Amino acid sequence: MDSGNIPAASAGTRALFGHRPFLLLFLARGCSSFAYQIGAVAIGWQVYAFTHSVLALGLIGLVQFIPSAGLTFFAGHAADRFDRRRVAQLCQGAEGLVALILAWGSLAGWLTVAEIFAAVVVLGAARSFESPAVSALLPAVVPEGMLQKGTALSSGVFQAATILGPALGGFIYALSPAAPYAVMALAWLAASLLAAGLAVDRKVAPKEPPTLKALFAGVGFVRRDPVILGIISLDLFAVLLGGATALLPVYARDILHTGPWGLGILRGAPAVGALLVSAWMTHRPLSRRVGMRMFQAVILYGLGTVVFGLSRSLPLTLAALFLMGAADMVSVVIRLSLVQLRTPDEMRGRVGAVNYLFINASNLLGEFESGATAALLGTVPAVVLGGAGTVAVALLWLQYFPALRNVERLE
Image (cartoon, rainbow, N blue to C red; front, side, top):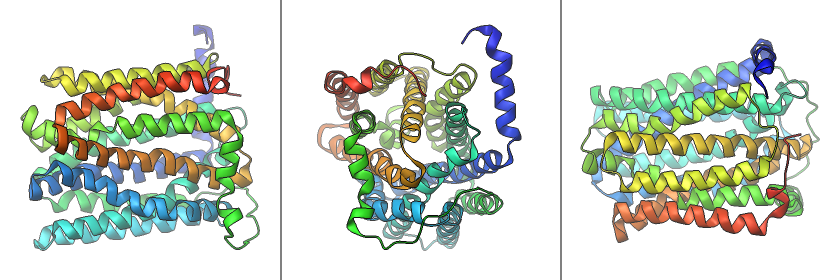
């Protein structure tokens, strides 16, 4: 896009925010993401403070993955067969209740590591239903022809939450371990109320029983489309190998020697890069060679991970995390836009569930893999090997998925 089209792009952005259904979904996703990101810092720091174990940090990801793996296909079926707004509301209410229990336990002093892990299991189950429902709602609230902008803005609010959530979580955790959980509960309540006001003109499909064919229809759809299969599997292995952020408490405490505030800043650094790229892509949408841009972004993410792993300097670490976040945002916008554009509405919940299982659950397994590898080889080798593996996967997929490599536009 040339500079003469920037006013038109800005007008398009204003039109999106003036469209009430999109605005409500935008704000609801922001509140829910804000709560989740505060929880990532509070739970990670509290578990590490109790255990001083990198393996325990990795187990946080594993115990979130277990319910996700078991429930994801039921979640996709629910998103396609029930009111997606109500599914999201129910999940946000459950998440808020769990946050209240964690706040009470932290304040009263009876909370244990086992109880934190039990809460994480419930949060993982609720999120496995919430994510496909919210993702499938996006095309229904974005005016025609504005999906890439809507995806960039929606991803941008997630990144804004990823900046503010960890920073606030780290600071208020230093005041009281109960405080972050109380803020999380309020944020999830706000998300639920915003979702309640969302009006979507969508005819709910007949409530057919969750047969195996219906449950796994999303898997078959993904397997038949080489572009969707390539892009989802690429992110699967890139995230699985590059899940170094699970080790940020170790870097903050033992390598860079900062406190909870430092962990919050480190967690927010990738989101700063992602948010800036999101704003750039909102005004300058990708117009050509989209497939190649995806591969380039994943390679940059892997290289940034290697630099992060080797760094002993807080500024250099922040710069590497910034680069990782910026590269990741490019791949996120391309992936989400392509998946939504190539999937019919009646399948978006189930395809979104497959996407969630491959990407978000692989993120959790990536945390476990990083923790386990760090316990075996050491923290720095684990991060560096993960970044190098991400680059290697991108180069392999570049050859094995020519249909993805040759995608020219997001149309």
